[in-house]
Each structure stands twice: as structure tokens, then as C-alpha cells.
Length: 608
Image (cartoon, rainbow, N blue to C red; front, side, top):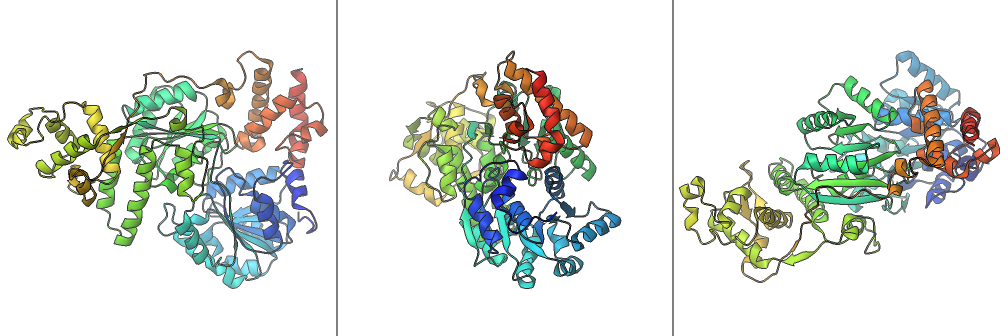
């Protein structure tokens, strides 16, 4: 169990976790906590946050107490740590009374390096009394943004965690999150009483993720084309806004031969658990979900995250897309976005019963999200700029960098659209307004005599699709507002006045009309196509994966917990022939070497 305090963090990194060197600020953070100081850590998903509290818990005397919001996350991390030879357990509602007593006994006897606890259980008097009787190495508060009352993952029980500093003032605390703008950071610091903590901010950049936004045309067909052409054998997550759309999309994908499963809060707990376990344990599963799915999912080989509807904020988008490519290998963040998304989210915001201060904050977040979709410059630079970074102007790995988008001067067209809204009484939706602009004489237009207004038929130079793009971009910029009438009626805003008076010019993004079949990616883009079909490397890769699957099924754990894809790829590349050589492969620690070394060497030798 407990490692001597003198053990170095680098030794634990190498011996237990199988890595030869720290990444980024990991070492500074770990040394800060080992020395007994507090830390607030902002690090992107897949950046190695867990090691920042796991290693200090092993090095320091006592047991590290980890606050984790989801049972699934606890189970996965505890399972993985046990395979790495770490003495670890969890306390949550999934345990029986006898199992709880057994874990508490281990805790009292000083047999645990780490204990994972749900926040509501941690704050119970019984748990606090137990902790007062043992040596606590540290408190780690994972997913710390859950403390933010205005955040998308707010958990009321997180606010109670300030009690840790009050009752255990000498125990170091480390709060960690992958998603926090400046206001959320301040709220975390205030609510958790971390004012004296050192702040560690790693770059939010995930260079292995390719960000792409397409104009929504036939969303289902676009999604199917994306999956079939680029990720036919990959695990992925597809996000939809409503439960109904999740069910319909999952069923439709299944009809197309894709192993798709729904996940949302309307399903029973048993079904949700079954679908989540299949996603974690099987290859090629696609989860179609609302935002109820994802937090606490640390599956490293998710190769894409697709959004069928627009997220409400950059923070939500960043966190959801961050579930792709946690292993550092190439991954996609793909989204379709259209006019209806803008209308729906603006209506939801207008009809919200939140206090004005919250509504203003949500309005700013939505505007930032819309701006991200409409920009013609580098998407990664925009994303990182939102989180306060100053990145290079072009990343070379987003759609706008790879396929530069043109803009066009559309002041006249903007004036026509805005004038049409005004001339028709500011009580009609986009489709009706486009019919008026294009001079379409429908019974409804005749009924309201809008064939007699000055804007009738003045917009025949643009197609219906082009006008929809104009209205979408005017709404995205806040020049048009959506009425709360439920029909998507448009109204002018104050910001539209300078446009109508000719005092400001307007430039629009020229939407890319994509070919029906998008070109396939280069073969190196995904893990499964990294090797040519009949190459020796492909045969070794498949043999190693088969062995990993066999072991995972025998032990009832997800395959990636045995070894990540990146570890298998390194085995293919270096072809170790001894336990010593295998121990040099990244991700092969002492415990896994002992458990699995001979079996993987057997596979490698058989392929010689």
C-alpha cells in the first residue's frame, strides 16, 4: 500500500503508470500538492489531470480523498488504478451496506492510497467523522466547474465542499476542471475557499482534434456520410438537443447498419447503465445522447463527437468535443448548424424564467457560440481566444484553415431583409419573409396584401438557400430577434438601425456547397486505417487488439483499461521481444507488465 514519502513523483509515474516523462505543468502541480500547498488546475480533457492528484496521493502519507460527481467515473478510474497496482476504493450508492463497511475498514486501517467519494456522501457527518480519524493525504475536487451555479453542469452539493477547508485546514486541496472561463474560475476559487491556491492553467488546445462546422442541409444524410466515409469502425458520440431526436436518430442509424444506442435521462437507469457499459466495453459503438451523457466518461478512443444541434455555449461545446481523442490520436469534432438552431435557441432564451442577470450571461454565451459557427477565420484560434489564450492565427487542422471560406459584401441584401421584416409588421417567420423577397404570390401573402409592400420581389437575385443564409447570419449577429410567440416571428433590434440607415456595411460568410460525397481522409487520420490492409503491421495490430479484447472480456473490464490504442501502436512500431523491452513502452507499468507482459510478448513473437 502506502509508498514512502521519500518516493519521487517521477518514479511513481514510471513504475506505476508506465510513462517516462511528465507533460506540460503536471510535474509543477504534483510537486505543489506533495509539498502540502493548494492548487487550482485548469487542464484540457486528455491532458493528464488525474495524475495530478493520483501521484501525490501515492507519494504522500495517508489516503487521498477524491471528490467525483459520477458513479461511472469512479468505477472506471478505480478499475484502471487497481490494474496498475494502486490500493484504491470508492464509496457511493452502488455499494451494499456490507461493502461500505469493508471499504471503511480498509480506510481506517490505512490500507488505501486513494478513496473516491461522491460529494453528497463526503459531506455527511458519518464520512467527515471517519476522515477525522485517519491520515488524509489530500482532497482532490474533480470536475470543479460543477460548483458554478451558472454553469451547464451545476451540482448543488459541490457548494458544500468549502467545509473541507474549514474542518481540515492543514490538508492540501487540488481542484481540477477542463472547462472554466474567467468568471467560472473566480467562482470556483470563491466557493471552495481557494483564494490562496496557486493557479495552473494549461493550454486549452487539443491539437489532435479537427474542428468542423457544416451548414445543415439534410442532417441525417450528412451524419451518415461523415461516419461512413471517415469513421466506419470507430467509437463516437452524437449529441442531439431533445430526447425524442436522440431516440429517432439512434434508431435510424441502427437501420443503416451502425451500432447506435440512445442515452438520455428519460430512459430507465438500467437501460442507461447497459448502454454506457456497452459503449465502454465494445468497439465501434456509437452513443446518441443528450448532454445527460458524457461527464465522467474517460473512454480514450472516442474518435469523433458529432453535434446535430447547436450547443448553448462555447464551454458546453468545448467540454463535449473534448470527449474525442483523449488518447492524443486524431479525432473529429463535427457539427451541422442551421437557421432553425438559431431560432430555437433564441426562443428558449427569450422564454427563460431566469433572472435578468443570468439571462444576460446566457445571451453572451450564445452569441459567442453563434460567432464561432459563423467565423471565416481559424476555429481553433477563436476557441482558444475565448478562454483567454493568444494562439497562432491559423492551426491548419480546422475546416476554415483546410478549406478557406470566402466572404461577400452584402449590405444591400441585409437592408432588404431587415426592411422586409419591418414592412410586414415584424410578425412573420423566415420562410414567409423569403417568399415576399423572392416575389412568390402565395394565398397567405395575398391575404395580408404583402404583395403590395415595397419589399415584395426585390430579392430575386438570391436563391431561397442564400436568403436563409442571410437571415441566419443576421440573427447570429443579433440584428434580428426571435419573438416569444412560438412561431419564430422576427423583429428588428436596435443594432439593425445603423445598417438600415446605411451607416455600416455588412459582410457575410459564403456558405460552402459541398459535394454529395466528401473525400476520404488520408489513411493516417484514424487509428484503424493507420496500416495498409495487407501489411505486416496491420496483422500485428489486429492480433494485439484481439488479445486485448480476450483479456478484457475475461476480466469484465473495458479493453482500453488493459492498454490504450497508443500503447498497442507503440508495440507494433517497436516490436519488443523481452519483458525489459516491453517495459519501455509508454503505458506499460510494473503491475501491467507482470499481469499481461508474457501474453502480449507471445502474440508479438508469434507474428515474427
